[in-house]
Amino acid sequence: MKRVVVLICMVLIVVSCGSKKRAASKAKKRDKTERVVKRPEVKAPILETKTDKPVKEPVVVHSNPIDAYIATYSGIAQEEMRLYHIPASITLAQGILESSSGKGRLSVEANNHFGIKCHEWTGAKIYHDDDADQECFRKYNDAKYSYRDHSLFLKERKRYSGLFELKIDDYKGWAIGLKDAGYATDRKYPDKLISLIERFELYKYDEVVTGRKLVVNSNNNAGLSHRVIKGDTLYSLSKRYNTSVDNLKKLNNLASNDLNIGDLLVVKSN
Image (cartoon, rainbow, N blue to C red; front, side, top):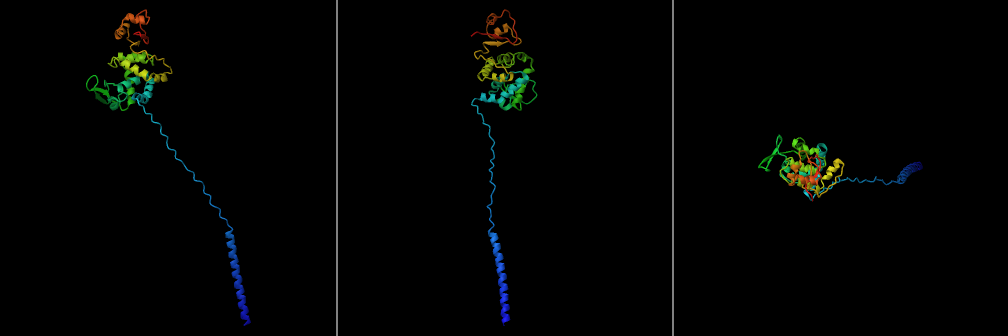
C-alpha cells in the first residue's frame, strides 16, 4: 500500500513538473512575442501628377474685314514679292479690292481673289457677271494658288513688262501702270489701290522684304504725281491728266521732252 502511494506521488510530481515546464515555455514565447514592437507602416507620399492642359493660342478677332484679310494673306503676298518682284502692297491692295476683302462670290466659291478671267485657262471654271453676263473666271482649290497665278499672270504678259522696270517698292507707279496696261477698266483703279495701301500701311510689308524704309507722303496721290513707265510720253501724260506738255515741262523743270523710266513727274500742282 505504501508503495502504491509512493508511485502515485511520483507520477503526480512528474506530471506536474512537465506541465510547469510547458507552461513556462509558453510564457517565454508569449513574452518574446509581446516584446516585438511593430513599426507603423510608412507609406510613400502619393505625388499628384497634374496633367498640363494645352495652352490655347489667343484668337485674334478683327473687327474690320480688311484687317482680317491682311492678317491672313500678307505672308503669301510677301513670298510672291520675293519670288516675282511684285510689291506685296500692290498684291494685297488688289486682293482686297477685287475680292471684297475675301467676301466676294469669286473668292468664296472659286478662291479667285484677283478677278482673273479664263483666257487660255484649262483648269476649273466659274461663271460670273462682270463687264458682260456670265463671264468665265478661273477657279482654284486654294487661295494661295490664286496668288501664284496672279504673279504669273503679270510676269508672263508683255503688256505688264514695263511694271517690272519700276522699283520693286514703287507702289504708286505699279498702281498707275496696272491701269494703263489694261488690268482694270475703272479709271479710279490706281487711286483706290493707293488709298488702300496708305490707309492700311501696306507698304510696310514691302519694307520687310526690301529692308528699306519708305518715306510716304500721303498728300500725294495718283492725280498729283506719276511714275514714268515704258511707253509714256509727255503728250500721252498731258492727255491722261488733262494738262499740257508745256505745263508738265514747267512743273518738272524739263528742258526737253525726253523721259526716263522710273522718273516721278509732278502732273498737277497743289
